Length: 490
Image (cartoon, rainbow, N blue to C red; front, side):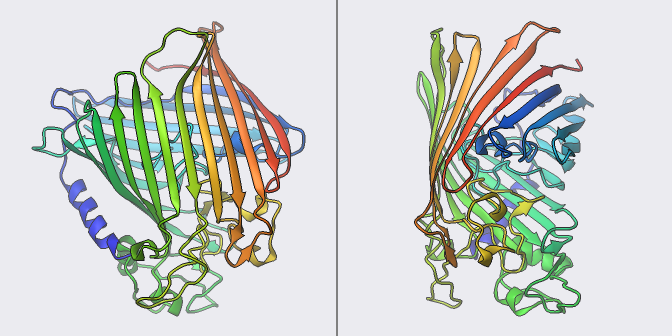
């Protein structure tokens, strides 16, 4: 997309200028820590884990049940002075079912200066102007897969631009990492990711406006498809091609450039352009957001502009002590059925449709990490649905044309129990090159609750029940029961 050079330049300029905190009065820079031990059990009426129990859990909940899970998280930061801190964190998860597995969703070393950070390793993150708790998650980076290990440099939240008195702030980062070594169709893929978001309005302003982008690239490594030398399988690599990947410009250099590379872009690019508005009232915070999808340049030509994630979140500021309260609600619509139409043609004035979201004809295993989709879980791996079309046997997904309506709610019950629910209904049309018959419908829902108990100095008991009813997934009813102990090193 031609928009990338301008956006990348803005990002680099922003990162070059260190900022103070959002308000001049703030002198402390708190760090979130997550220290806990948790044990959980999962079950269902068949061997499958229901959608909303396993989706957007950073790839840590097993897909097959019955299963038990034990996890421990240790994270701490140590101040060097009023501005500098160093920290480290690790989270380990052991899942015990027919195929036991040990996972490490977090393992990082971090250095922080005021509201900037540099870390190496895996760290759970949310990217994009969308709700990450009750919603479906950001389109391109939802928290559905294990975090990709990377080197990351950027801000911790929004920071003020100097000399604007807090009226203009930004949140930005730049990172590079590595995918798993051996994938179904590729090996040794590299990962590039960056984002830039601006905010107009102070922290306590009644009205705040947001806008920005996130950009992800899979590049380098080797592939079985559309390469210059099928024997070596090498994809374009090296610093000069890294520059092409970062800026998203057409072309590439070197002997490994194929016709596919030179007429498209080096690597598999995707992301979203995001807009949001936040309104503060006496009793609530209202947040409206929209993510526009881009993947192969269609959005630049205003093709596929119908596609995207639209959401509204309302948070109540006050509790009235009732036995039943709703404190937060989210409603979303995800639409990806347009994709600029069924035709893709190169050249000025020609259609640039058939974006084929999360698939790539060179990187056939697509936008995934260890078999799980990195983006919205409503574009699932082909292996997880009832519709296993032969034409997409070696692609990541056979279902990227979807319409999803989603509602998420959170509240309290009897003042002691925190509850939440997620209810999603989807219409699934497959992909342009292999459409589903009749657009199978699917409902996936969850209701969960947790409460604190005065055992061993305080623990949390939690549970959830979820169902999948429809034609996309197997009919499933399942549950999760767990107990968690939080603690601090202070």
